[in-house]
Image 1 (cartoon, rainbow, N blue to C red):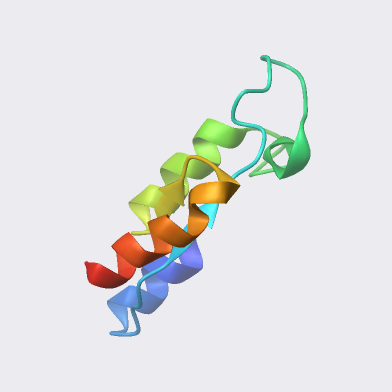
Image 2 (cartoon, helix red, strand yellow):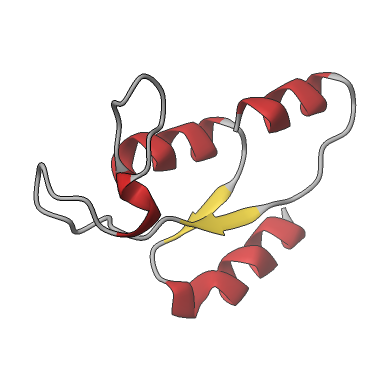
Length: 76
């Protein structure tokens, strides 16, 4: 996400969409990439989603809706 923020500052921005698995994981339980280290061993799905949205990435609530989410991003 930080890379995309930095690139946007340089005038290199494009519509993006993404998905983070593990959003419904119980606290303390790792599931999918949401359990991967974000920074310093902290963070989870909601932290990643917030970082992606802050970078202008449209986050799909479901992998089955990723195409629709990308279409929304492309339309602006």
